Length: 126
Image (tube, rainbow, N blue to C red; front, side, top):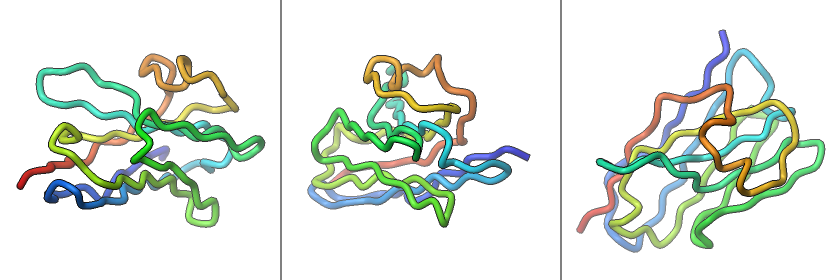
């Protein structure tokens, strides 16, 4: 069964950090471009960061405070989020698409992904 499972969310104070994990089962993530999206209440889901497949690694994050990485041995992709702000409060989702993609516009478009996790809540509050 193909599955993506996010973890690592929680309640943190502004200025703190969190590392989200996206663990895959049923398939190998190294041939997939993986992205993180987030959705705040009342807002559309937006792309945050992506990492292309392992064949030609390329990463991009819309926020310099966020860093995406992958551990192929663990079949997991991470999102390190530093200096969190209340505006970062949202449900964070990871998504995967077969192949290598470099275009920011394409890789951070929700319509282009085949597999999605269930999401993990991140709340940044004093």
